[in-house]
Image 1 (cartoon, one colour):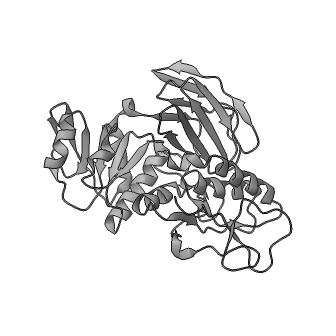
Image 2 (cartoon, helix red, strand yellow; image 1 turned 90 degrees about the vertical axis):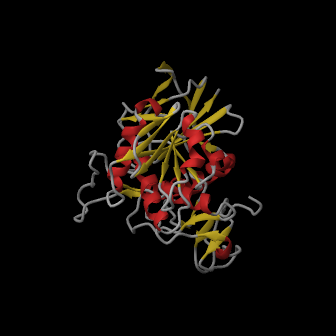
Image 3 (cartoon, one colour; image 1 turned 30 degrees about the vertical axis):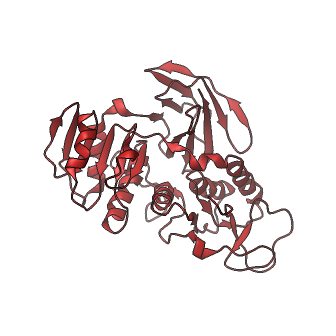
Length: 349
């Protein structure tokens, strides 16, 4: 990205005393730092405050049909906007509730920056040290913004209009199932390199003649309304579902993929989303674990990663800890300690 990465602060008037780095601009006016150039960034209006969604009485968490907590997460939105307009940074303007805890502020940082975006930081004295530590952590690992997602399925669409609604919710629900996905524009076969399956969410008609060589070479092409059939070493899968029920579509995708294609699995981590990436040279990887409840997880949480990485390090905003890995089913399983709002598992080949 040619321009500097913007980390904005919401603070009208004179800045609070003390070191505010790595904040480097102001959102909504103020003095002492340059203004965020809103014309040069993407600020989506539909971003949500990251959290576990509560019921209308606010007394209990809502669940999806799987029983897992429903979370308000923005990772899919950051990824979609970066794909659609890679030259403009994504900035999430989400505002905390009056009683938000410091952990909730940290979650807002991770919910944006783990996916390559930024959060308009809201200054609060009690949470500011943790917010700064979180932002500095991601800026120290800025190379992650350009690492490739490890993918079990490519989601194909241009992500505008109806494609945005269908594709965006599809991405959101795939993340809740811990299904690794990448994004591809219609007709871009280069984006399918190394990916074994693809889901067509575009409203355009599928150019089957363009995709058939990839399918016959071993790929799985999924779409609503197709006739399921074998094609060479691959297959075409027609999903018996409707975009009126995106949850049903994603459940059908997951069923068609089978567990054999999993790139990552999490156990006893119902309020977590994950995002698994690998460096361009393939020698390093990172699995972001984002905990939308902000409460520390149980001590029997574990993760399985399909690749047998040589070593794994747990990195939080406070410290790094070497992790014990066990070879399981061609990959590695890692027991995890209790985790807060965010942790990264840094991997080396």
